Length: 129
Image (tube, rainbow, N blue to C red; front, side, top):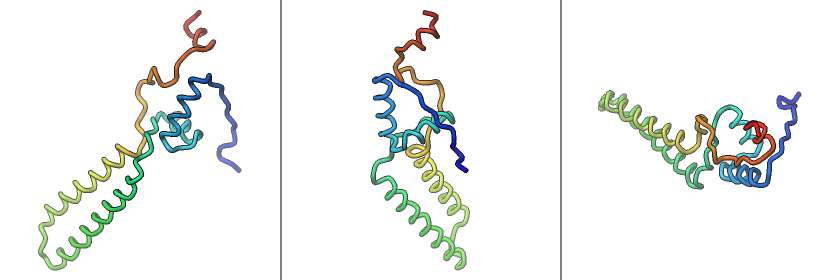
């Protein structure tokens, strides 16, 4: 059985639809995935630059090499363990911060006023006009 079995349709005016499509395209997500993130209170980020994944792969290789060097140095008893641990924590924190800044969606705060322009009967009803 499908987990998502409830179809959901809504209408937008041309300006809203254009803004929505542009944001979805920039994010690299499907429209459905974009809406699901927004529903969860997240703001999808723009898709990362094409070389982002290659750079992160390279950073992970460097981290793996550092671990291998540390293991060997530890066996030979020629390592400053505290310094190594401190530097590895910095490295891991840097990778985490890069990932958060580029990939992970932001938690939604106040809705942006300009995100979807108003201008419909529903908006007039809310204002009492």
